[in-house]
Length: 100
Length: 423
Image (tube, rainbow over all chains, first blue to last red):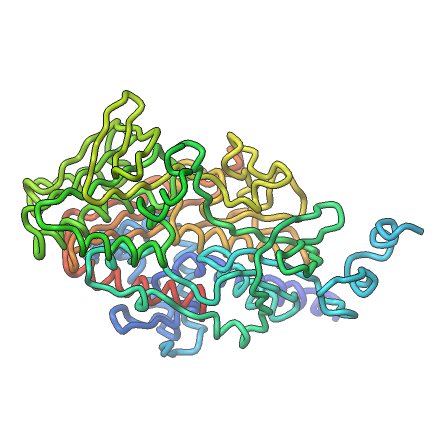
């Protein structure tokens, strides 16, 4: 029982840290894509609330150069695959909304 | 017991109520952060400290101006495709984030007592202070610009606002066949590609309204500082015969009455409209107490936290810092500094170690006409061995050529970074 509680606490802590790191990491993208993925202006897709796998696949395709882009290939090459997973998980967990 | 000992003994929060004349919320146990400067760096820091602390930290923003005027896109006002009102935003959303705004100018910092004295007489206490003061101009390096009236005749328009509007008016009043000359200081200065974008914007205006006129760039640097091949190609093609680029012209004095720039070699260049971008250093509040400890001009910081290497509990952001390698003094970068700093401030005030591996990005669009745009981008990560932020190998790059597609992305960038900073 004691061990289980400890495990649960550790798990909760590691989840909190992962969420935290995704949130902090995504802040590097928010200048173009909006706070917490709630973009504005209608030119770029709203990232908040999109499926995690689709987001991660897009970022990996930009990184690999297989998805055409003006700027996103150059940006995506700056992130590790693990960071791409963190970004995708964070965005997928945000409420799907566009900032008016 | 002396007051200072008392503060040390009981700690910052409980001592708040005891500091006479202090404007902080009496009795509040929350940590106090004061942010000085509501530009891209300071406004972003204020917002993100509130967001990431979930309201557990009180934030006061000190900013003398009632509204925020964006430097990015301000060259489009000179080109005529934007009005200054299009780039002017309010701080209205900050009340919703619980940010207290004090419309005043920070005048003096007492690092021992951890207080900031404002011009209006108020004193604010802080647990952590965030300075995002932008740049001040080094007029002493251009003696003629210190003559009475000189700064009303020869404009810089390097802080968006009244100067931008006034320079546009000078361009509109200039007869066709005139010369617009712009001087560029030695790097580093705010917005490396900004002067070259400005040359494009003025040339775009001239090509439509005053086609016999010329744009003369007098650059103290040996070559175009940013996006060089892209800008030079635009000048040689779209603006052929109109833009004249002169490198290694270091302006050391200005005869403002005669709109003449004077180089260190004694060359004199007279113009119909002279625009002098002066040499720059960290804003004056950050120069106090030796914070500007790099060449007496810029503020060195610890890139994990953006805390000054000179003063504890004081963070410096944006154009005022001594930059890491390949880090431009840009609005986007200031927004990014602010988030690394905000995260660290929240962590440190919560008794946690700051993120050991912060990252940031830079995205910078330049308008070469009213619609076509080029970019430079980079991703930076903390290098623990070198204790600085370095460009991630393989990341970043430039546009292949100007495009209207990037023009739409540039406008989208502006909408989103304004929202990320202010909304």
